[in-house]
Image (cartoon, rainbow, N blue to C red):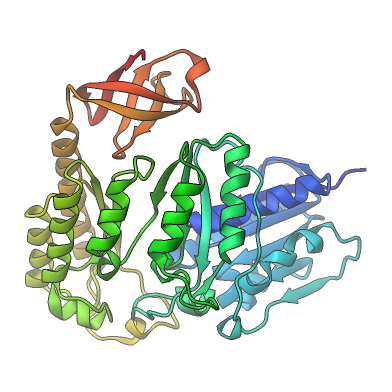
Length: 436
């Protein structure tokens, strides 16, 4: 009888990539994959720890699995499992296997093993890991775009961030493994690949011989000229003119970058251990616009960091107002035990954080509307993804990351098509298919 396995994933693109690798490995071993809401023999929970709320969600998923099948075995992995295994045991009991981030490559074998101990912990010191876990992926279930994890870990130790403690130091996939994964995705019919990592701009610095980040990007895009590529996120200091010249010189590298600002106040940035002044971020955005005037520019903002007074917040609000950015990802600061910021003084009240988050999310809507409006009447290339939405229209993203709805037959799903941007209505962008 096939083993029934259910999997759920919290958190970032890196976690999603790793879960897709688990799915690929389980399918090879002929496990029966079932939805997480169904009764299963084994539940895999790939957890997140970036906020306290993510840890709470992880515990909720553990309890939900046990309600669905009290006799099931739990396999808990991810960042929350790495930093808080005892909290997981408090939520789950003894029929649990905890797999640290440094041992994720062993997870499929652990799941499929007939040996069933009451409690297993496959942890190790993540800070001592020198090599990245090899986690090849065949397909992303239910996704038109594929994520490719080039790199894991982070050396920055921002004062609010638990990730370096959960993921360890920066480690890179070998060039051959990267290009092989691109080849697999291309052969599987993916038309777009998002290059991701915990700190992807550090790729190659730990390899021997060391390889320049720009060189791996060049080799990737040239290895699959028919595939669209995007970068998930880069630090402001990594967006060099050489990088922008490279991206803008390839038709299959999409004009879209995501860069974290976190704060527009110089003193708050110092307290965050972010190594750039606000003026550097401003210059970075202007460089992007110079080389790629059509580019979408996404920005991360962390609101309510300890010591953020009204003036500091206004500095953040004003710098974003005055920059030609496209959209914002706004996060309220969440105290994370184990980080430097958790013990800082002058924590911001929740009500004030909520008010500031609301103001920035309104600004996000304004920025999106302004960017989308600029492109009305233009024809853009769109990867048609799905009609599975409330409007029952085909939906996809333009090359410069505008989500657009349009009438199209099902046969264009997973195809790159031309769409003319027509109008914006209630924040949604609508277009029409332009037949070639």
